[in-house]
Length: 455
Image (cartoon, rainbow, N blue to C red):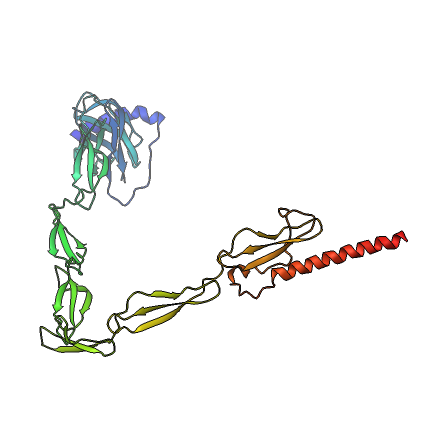
């Protein structure tokens, strides 16, 4: 009876539609026929459209579906027929669930949009999925032969997007001593993770260093410390202490009368030594005891005894005169040696030795030995302070004064002042006679020339 009434209604509605719109036919696929409700999304206040599609349509002429939705989030604004079936019965959009009916006079095998639903997302809608559910009565979906056609149903939804409000950062994965962690910032409305960032590794929280192996003077030690969080242990070396040398020598072996001993500087912490020294062997002799006194001409003798082993050492006392101070016998001169002597206070033996010649002590200025005259040369020389010796004899030309500068008659060797004069130098008197004779001869020659000219 229900199908019959639906059929009559469909004939009446489609009679008008038939005159203007042809039936849509398409090939039937092998998959199961299905009503598919789309899944869409939008923000509060948005208007969204949701299509109910037909897939693998085997051919139907009538259909009735019921659509249910979340009225707290969505408000149905309109229902528009799609392209699969004609003859959609007007729908009251205020109803939820909403019943939608189609009746035609011929089967339609079209696939695609059966109907388009337009919703408004309410301002106070909670974010998240709002389901749109489709159900149908099997007796309300059939073909022209009045045979029911089964359709699978895939429901859809409208996902209400959240206008996110970022909350405080909160830990997601805690950081460890060596690994970074993560923290997230979620929306305070929907809990969606908006941001994620790494957090720094914490680093170890070490305790105090503890000695594992103590160092000594030459070998390293070791110490460790442990992280109080992850129990990781870190180890490091401790430098050797180095030797601690004592300031004084330690006798390692005492010397004896016949064997050397030794001593060294010891380390106060270990058995190491440095700066080892030999302590020479030797007797501990007492004072010398004279056994026979020495004389001026005969040796004496003496001995001493070791206080440790009683070893006796003997030695001679050389014979020796007891001489007094040296006394001058003959004083030396500039050119002649002198002599001196000393006498033994015991046996009166006398010892004599030479005293070297003193050498000349030359004056620094010339002495005028002969004043020059108008017709005769003069002379000057350097005199010894201690004897009659002279050197650097120099002629003072006639007609000059003794103070006029003159050149020495013959250059003297620079070493002459250091050589003692022996008294063998040419006599001054002979030189004077020579110069006087030369002057007289010169005068005679001049007078003779004048006489010749006068003739």
